Length: 78
Image 1 (cartoon, rainbow, N blue to C red):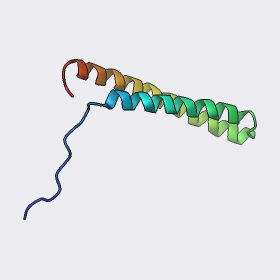
Image 2 (cartoon, rainbow, N blue to C red):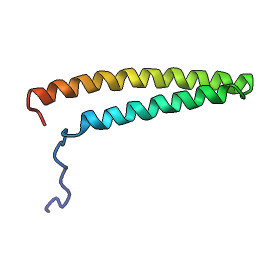
Image 3 (cartoon, one colour):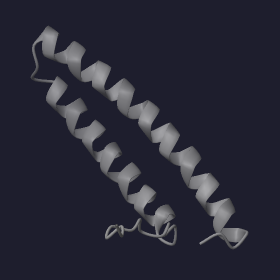
Image 4 (spheres, helix red, strand yellow):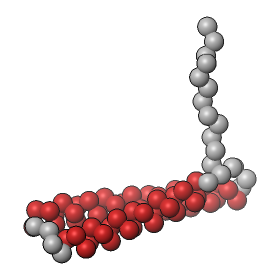
């Protein structure tokens, strides 16, 4: 029985740009959430603050991954 499904090859050629876009979008979402907090109830404000903390962690992780991808690109691992 042949396997008609094959895994796609790992294409890292645009990972840095993709991660940059993701960081930008996340930062924009954080800014929008900060604006929303001005009109939010105390409960909603707490939820937004918690979500923005998670977003900050995600941004830090994406930035670290971006550095890894840049290093890999410089070594020729595309």
